[in-house]
Length: 116
Image (cartoon, rainbow, N blue to C red):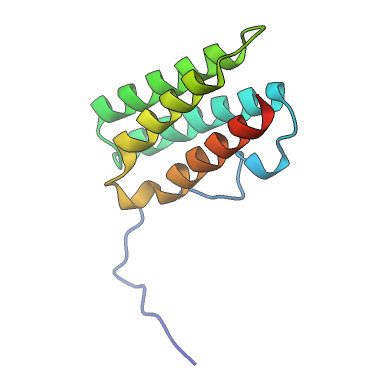
């Protein structure tokens, strides 16, 4: 049996994949928009915990908001949405602490391919 000594461990931020964001339940365009907006809130939390640099938070949130705005259009452009989400993901690719957020963005990209 393994024992982990966590006495000196300090956790500033931890993305909880089972928290407020759940891309697994997305079945339509409106629900996808809601989850992307929740994702932006999670990015704010990571920024407030200083896990993500403020400038990167701004860049990521801008790209996600552009994806949200495009998703809300009567005839959204799937490729544009995907491009914005890929750019958001790329800003976060070297930040290990937000791997769950990156996984959420990847799942959102898959859903855009299915829903639009």
